[in-house]
Length: 109
Figure 1 (cartoon, rainbow, N blue to C red):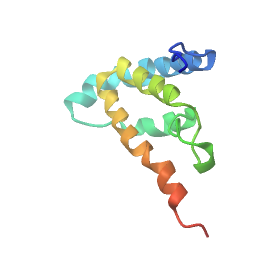
Figure 2: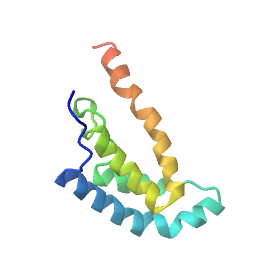
Figure 3: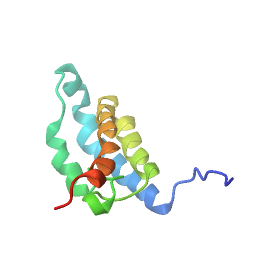
Figure 4: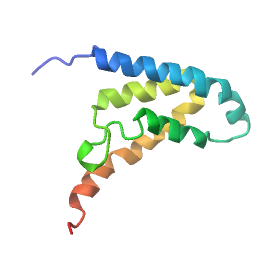
């Protein structure tokens, strides 16, 4: 059995850097306010989409960005590190896993 490789690739380190900068600029400054108001920062979704990360971890064949589970983990870890309320976004990971299997079993036209 092969030993797991826990080192990030150059691409994953770049992903980490970009998401860390995004979090510091866009999420951390408003995190306490959003938490106090019990408001989710929905306005950030288009920005994350423009970065190409909303579909990270989903197969490109179904409209995702591709990437591995580790890529996806790096993304959510950086969001949560910059602002704990942003970790609520990680709950969307529960929605990510059924998509490929439901698309694969959907009727074809």
